[in-house]
Image 1 (cartoon, rainbow, N blue to C red):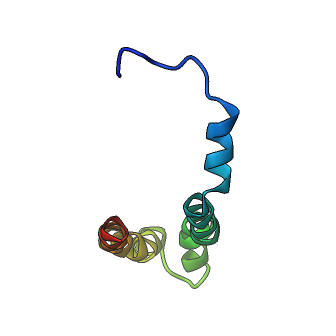
Image 2 (image 1 turned 30 degrees about the vertical axis):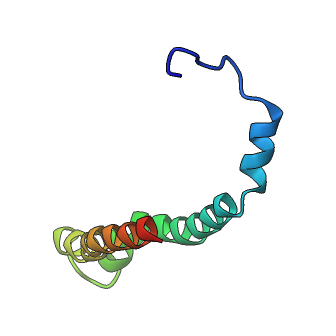
Length: 83
């Protein structure tokens, strides 16, 4: 089947993709999680600096959540893979 590649995607494939509830659940979870989190990750060092900490310390304090995000992300990925 690898030798028979489709040159275009049909309307039926788009219909199946946009009516699949799993795609919509993934989209909503991603939108609710990544939108606010990315904004906070961007401005977190500036927010911590406004509390009176130095640049290096505020960057280190803002990075704690990002380091915790890695094992939590792996945990959620493992659980979602098995469900």
